[in-house]
Image 1 (cartoon, rainbow, N blue to C red):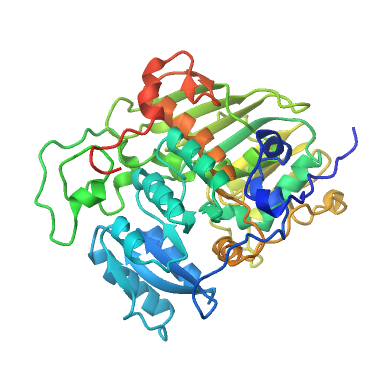
Image 2 (image 1 turned 90 degrees about the vertical axis):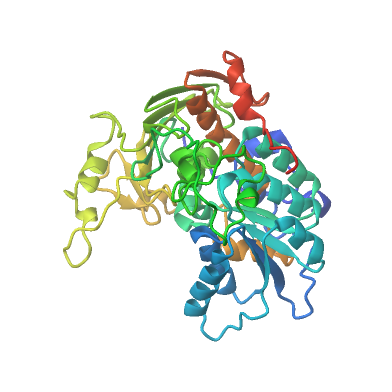
Amino acid sequence: MGLKPPIAPKTMHPKNSNRLSRRQFIRLGGAGAASVAFGVPYLLRAKDTNGKLRVAFIGLGSQGRSRAKEALGTNLIDLVAFCDADTNAFEGAKAEIAKSYPAMKLDGIKLYGDYRKLLAEEKDLDAVIIATPDHWHAPIAKASMLAGKHVFCEKPLTHTISEARELRTLAAKSKVVTQLGNQGSASRNLRRGVELIQAGVLGKVKEVHCMACTVGCAAGQMFPTVGDPVPPNLNWDEWLGPAPAHAYKRGVYHPGSWRGWLDFGSGALGDFGCHHMNLPFRALKLDYPVGIDINAEQMGFSTYPTKVGIDFHFAQRGDLPPVTLKWYDGGRQPEPGLMPKEVTAYLDGQDATSFEKNGKPKKVSRDGVLIIGENGYTFGGDWNGSDYIFLKSDPKLWGILNHPACKNIPKAFPDSPGHVTEWIKACMGGAPVFSDFETGGHLTEIVLSGVVALKTGRKLDWDGPGMKARNASEAEQYVQAQYRAGWI
């Protein structure tokens, strides 16, 4: 069978530019708004008289500070406000920004401890960037969208599947611009990987391996029952928000350790799933898994398990064969013999591509995404997912952008100016983003179905559209958002 051109962008009427039918979504290979009329403007603009987007940053941990510096570097925004439950985070964020942009004046930035007060008082605010712990993503994103603000939210989009479905529905009805923070979506390598795989360069694909082996999360622990005094800089009740009430314990949850705890984070899978699965989700037009098998250690605690292996089974999609996507984290690796020898040689530093031009070995991570087809495979790091390509007749790994057999495959997606820049420009009337809440929300639902399996502790017969496990009614409690009274 000859190679097929990749799916080309389609033009839609502006009033429908935020909306995708399920049929359109599958046909567009999971590229969502990226494939829906690049160049169709959102009928929105910044309200500030200087033409810049007025942005507030909610959540000022490492991710929030990184996004703030990245957004300020575009020179397209005015930083209006910071919001965090920890007042120490304000000074930390200011210090990092001042170091990166010493000429920038930071005295006028407003500081809020509650996002609800921020949204109520900042009437001229255009947009928010959310980088809180996972359990706060959906409530803040929803409130911001209902207030008419454009939203950039870190991954995973939500803490539960029902929240992801709700945000997808809300985004389809909304006129705001949304973007999930899986920055690999802006990579030319990832976009080229989608183009090549959808054009049939690899032939039929039945096997994907996603390895996130270096991620460390708390494991084998139960929620502490005895707490410590809450430091004066932290509003602990606000930090908990809609999550179940737990005693504050110094160094256990905040700052930065919340990801491994069931009530706040989504484990290593939630942390990196929207990165690693991004390429196969788009390129292979994955819908929902029909079955999820798990193999993990240290299960049944208040924290996520270790040495996790998950098999996501996807049914046939049109003329595309069934696919098994294997996930590994916490040190678990593919079984011997599953990895192609060329990839093994690269990872072990035994291949020419493993060395820098000066002859010194590269520092190579064993994290990555391997997509195996009948004609060859692609392999790449977690953000891009497609740094290298190898076809059966090749003597070596080739860079995904320069394989001679792929030169005639046309581009379906334009290059990105950068993940955050792309979103800012879309908010100001530019081209639609590549990872909006429809696309990112669907991907998040797939990732979180694996999280549900880990929390349930058993194999699931999965009904994705229905958001339920046919064989495990106990999974329901992990699918539906359950908020602490008084917070939503």
